[in-house]
Length: 447
Image (cartoon, rainbow, N blue to C red; front, side):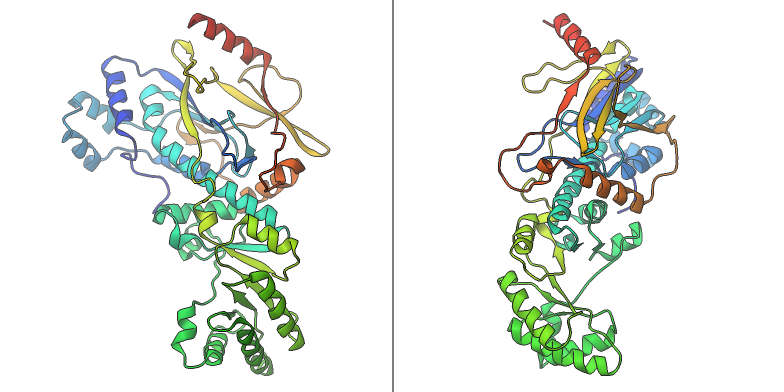
């Protein structure tokens, strides 16, 4: 539950390959690309996320006594290799797409160059961290597009796959637009605003619904959001108005009411009428309950008077695209550029850069080129973030990352901002002449 991760968060084959590299003296510098081989059918773009935790991990990578002691029990590794691990530190360089930026298939999101053993051992953690947070951020970005000017809060912690996923998922959702999170730990660790209302159990603990509203509102003056659908939603709204009048007499405002079940659109209209007729036009309506970008877009498209949304499981678990096809592939070593030719899994050789072209209407195209290739037009997307194992500059604030994501979403072509299943023209990603020549040349050698 802390930044970074343990050295043994790696697949066994990373260690067995590293042991063989060590035995054969193959620990020379190598370059690996982390990229998404393809986008899920339900995604038109992805939002890069998770870089900060990757850098924490790389800077703090250590094999301590407990890790080395465990590895010795596997009867796989000799003393020489374990000694190599005991002194291992990440000494390489990393180039990466900034968090909050849109990325597309086949584009390097991260490029790692380091002695081969170091570069190999970090694969599992980097893939896990980048693919999970990018998955959640990409889903949350779609929720943000559906919400428009309406706020939404991350409610996902209780139903996602584990504590660490909940914590980092809250961060990823915040990057992509969530204004707050229900997870208090995310507030402490990342400084994300925290938000919460009440549960039905609270209302049920009191003999009368109005008594529950009254107690909660007085115990949290000016911060109370009343859950009004425990029994009858419209009657709950009337009781909320009754309590709001009592509070107003004492100078205490009621912040909002929350709907969590039923026909949210119709109920929101009826509740809005009750609140307005009672003179509480400034009391907001919050909706939750199995929401995602599709339901939110439908509710707002039909004019539902909902001010903000609590979005949980379907965002935190990205239920319509619960995994991403992220890979980490060798593209260059001491012998030169490398190319994988497996069917449907061909890689792009050599160290590369992505050049992004922007126009008056926003993002126009991406060009994948060799790192040192001269390219006319476009801005380089990958930035060097680690050199000799240390950060090249202070990390941007979480608010700066949020701002980048917000600006990026605003620059997406309209066809990529759509949420439906209809056909659309994918964002154009091409490869440069130099990269094509290298691809052809190496491919001919392996024919």
